[in-house]
Amino acid sequence: MSTPKGYVVQEESCEIEGWDDPVMGKVVWRTLLSGDRTPTSRLTVGVAEIGPGHPEAYFPHRHESPEMYYILSGEGIVTIDAEDFPVRAGSAVFIPSNAWHGTRNIGAETLRLLYAFAVDSFADVAYVFPDVPTTT
Picture 1 (cartoon, rainbow, N blue to C red):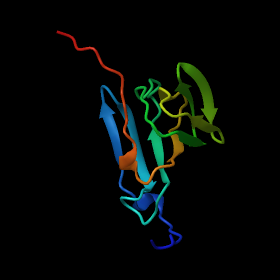
Picture 2 (picture 1 turned 135 degrees about the vertical axis):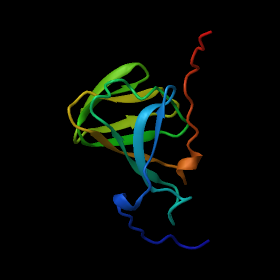
Picture 3 (picture 1 turned 30 degrees about the vertical axis):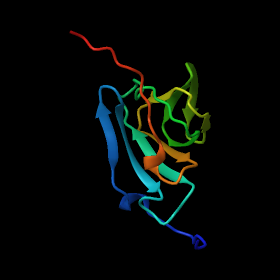
C-alpha cells in the first residue's frame, strides 16, 4: 500500500450537486474530498448551501457515519433527534451516528456549512429518509 500524499482542491473546481425533492428537501453542495473523486481516503469533506427563503428543513435524515458541520456563513437551526440548535458562522456541530437531523436557513443570507464524514467516499454514506405517506 502506498503512503498517502497531500492534496489540494479549490471549491469552485468541484461539481455542484444537490437535491430539490419533496422527500429530501432543497440543498446544494460541492464534495471537496472523497476517495472516489480525489486521491484521498478515510475522510469525506464538502460545502453545502441552503439559500435564504428556505426556512423549512431539508428533510430529516440519518446515516450510520457520524457527521460534523462547521458553519461558514449565515444562520440557521440544526435539528438533531428532535432538539433544535441555533447556529451561525463559527458554530461547530456534531451529529452522532444514526441521529435524525436536518438544517434550515432562518436568515437573509445563504447558510453555508462545511461537512465532514470519516468515510472513504461520499458514496459510502447511505442516507435514510423517513417514510413519506402517500395520498390517494
